[in-house]
Amino acid sequence: MKSLAELAAIKERMKDKVAIREGSGSIRVVVGMATCGIAAGARPVLSSFVDEVNRAGLTEKVTVTQTGCIGICQYEPVVEIFEEGKEKVTYVKMTAEKAARVVAEHIKGGRVVDEFTIGNK
Amino acid sequence: MKELSLNILDITQNSISAGATHITIALTEEENGRLTLVIADNGCGMTEEVLRRVSDPFYTTRTTRKVGMGISLLTLAAEQTGGEVTITSVHESVDPVGHGTTLTATFDTRSIDFPPLGDMVETLSVIIQGHPEIDYSFRHTTPALAVGLETTDLREVLGEDVSLGEYEVMQWIESYLREQYSGGDGSEDETV
Image 1 (cartoon, rainbow over the protein chains, first blue to last red):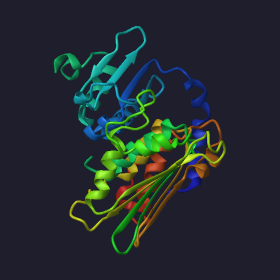
Image 2 (image 1 turned 90 degrees about the horizontal axis):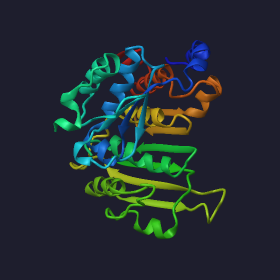
Image 3 (image 1 turned 120 degrees about the horizontal axis):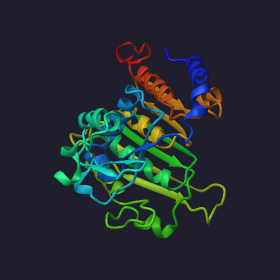
Image 4 (image 1 turned 180 degrees about the vertical axis):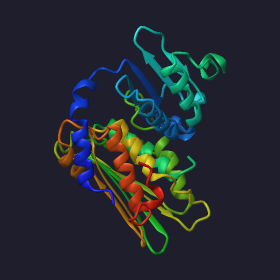
């Protein structure tokens, strides 16, 4: 059974981390979560980004956030990646699997996955 | 929307845009197959004018994007099964303290047009990930099981410094809920 005691243990582990993390994320992953995005499958895309970023050990560098309708509903699920000093990258028609590749190749590896970007649709 | 849990994720965004600090999501399934969904918030509420037009798919409060297709899609899903959607709301200008919106949707789960509920745990997880500062009460009761989550209880343990959106906390919440859905032992859904 999951217990509140386990939660208290998580709190203890978090103590040191939290102070460092505030405002240190230099990459922002923004997932469109309006009606259009959700209907097109944004929920598993968001979950996949959260999981993969954590798995890659990048939670201190990368923040995954949600936004409303970006205005290109026909391309949903849409994900925008903002990185300091670089141009915004817009990924379209995303899936959980594509999200995993974006984390590995773009966020971790620094190479934009061109085939998923809006310019290629 | 393929799953009712996606409608729930979508409708909850309205409560968030309304500036709610507490959101209740309750699903109640009865022996006779009737499912009642209640989403209640303490957000700014709607004026009577907005409330009247809220089910109109061509109406949206453009500046805030508070409503749009979302309510229409949920209404469609409910009515297809013979159920309905009702919304009551008290605008903050009317009651500065007790304002908020309550949406109630009913479904006949035995109808061939009843959409699958889908993954409620992922829906809740995504809602909390997006806005970990809000408090949520979640209840899902059926004749066979009772699932619940009160984020205020978790916050009491976590204190102010640890957000509900922390990955480990989110994982805990997901396991906690999946355990309840699988009837208590959680063996098949233990992923942590």
